[in-house]
Image 1 (spheres, rainbow, N blue to C red):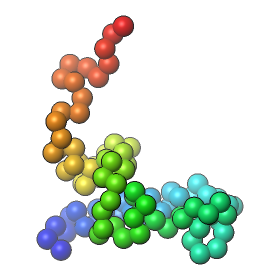
Image 2 (image 1 turned 90 degrees about the horizontal axis):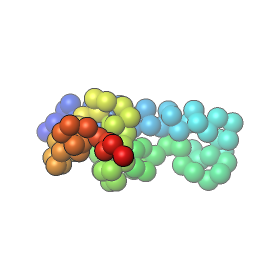
Image 3 (image 1 turned 135 degrees about the vertical axis):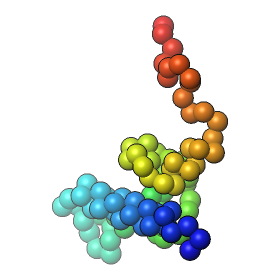
Image 4 (image 1 turned 45 degrees about the vertical axis):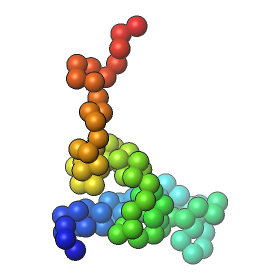
Length: 93
């Protein structure tokens, strides 16, 4: 891979997302990596089964905002216009 840091962080974040899904499912786990409600527990961020095939970049940004330091989210956000207003993020009423 051309970017070992990004690849390693994608693997780490995907594993963390899977762990969180399993934890939240608790006793609702069914067969074949799915919850008893039919939801897949083994997909990564944005529903991807393979962290090397990115989709749903907004989901990666959301994950990064909730988990600061996520390399992919940081890089996506760096490409955008300023996300927050310079002085504040709320306007007084």
